[in-house]
Length: 344
Image 1 (cartoon, rainbow, N blue to C red):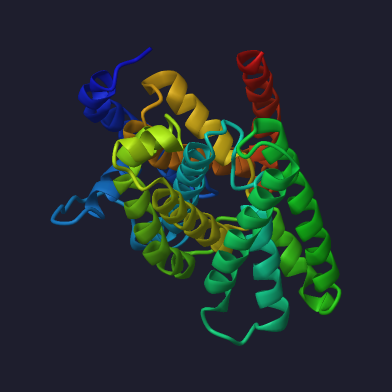
Image 2 (cartoon, helix red, strand yellow):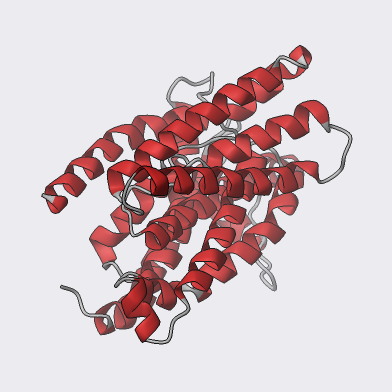
């Protein structure tokens, strides 16, 4: 078993490596497009956007505007959404001590999706209604799944919790479909949102950033507490940790992260399972390193998924949620098989 000191000493190296991977994927995302811009000019232009850095990229004003107004916000939104979903997945797994817990499977994304659909269809003129509705829906979805799993079997059991999440997701999705019929003219907008999209532009980035900052900060500060919580509530309490309070705060922060991501990008599945599991395989199971690496790695993963969505059938474009499902579904089966072997 990996010691806690090892990950602590290695954390800066892992974080630096993850940031390097994120930077490479973001540059690759900036390169993709109809206009042919050299990689070196993109790197120089990206450096010029940094504070207190002034570099002449040699790009014409039109090309600079293309990068800044179209490509950059898309790449940044994918990075933020991917990071939030991956970190939320890692947090849910820590709270429930369940490797299959995920915003998409636990009902959080479906709850946020239902609430957002209600806001789009019934409250289109209320400013700020979508983020608030998504947060309330995400919390409600997780609460329903956990309550159902708790009453149907041992709390935190892998199979019980996943089945409860599937049931809640199916039920909330059915209600969402019913709500859509009240305003048929909004169906195209809702369906596009359901399949996932990170092309919302700077407006969506400014909308999601405050929620992302709050949720990410809270979760990162609770990494050590999640490590203690992983040994069990009784042991954690004996060590002076208020387990119920930690679980409540982490659940709220993870639900806020999920809601913020869903509100600006739609339903993008499996990011919260794929990335945390890869991180644990590479860097160990301490949440002091799993959470920050999931945040960074989730951003890189979704930027890469968006790049694939734009290029696989170019000039047409796949919904980004389709790409993550192609990757995540077989990955989920593999994790399920490993979990069953571990229990056996």
